[in-house]
Image (cartoon, rainbow, N blue to C red; front, side, top):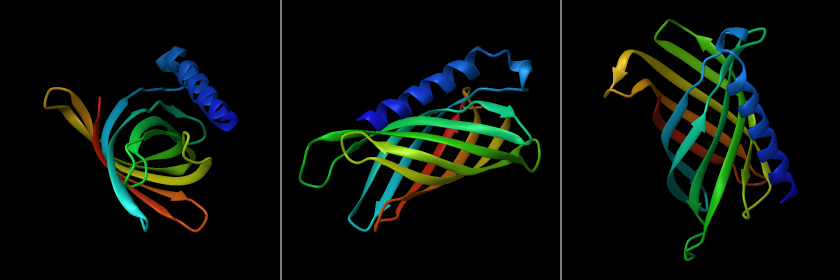
Length: 162
């Protein structure tokens, strides 16, 4: 539980700092993303939605934070649910004005269902010239490898950003 509070505190702190800085200070942009997430393990598969806050900024290279949460059902045969928190720092490599590739490491915490896990994630993002369906200016597909002792977990994400 202590690790959860450290991760949650870091996520909130980074979100507040990036949200309060003027956009011009680091060439920052902000987006929210909503995705369908499919999780595949040898012990079973599960599906959910995910909401993430994604501040973009420039250090030595363009970077993007990826701070999110989703709600999952526990193991088969139970009705309990648990929250999964993500925090990633990703390089934001632009191929063109409309296509970018994000890749980087992070951590994931399954609240009341495990401890901190290392993840490596990647997203391929299409930036639309006009808002898709009137709201989305990004469409993306992503993959996360969640590194769990003796159980690599694969996560596939498909969603949009506003």
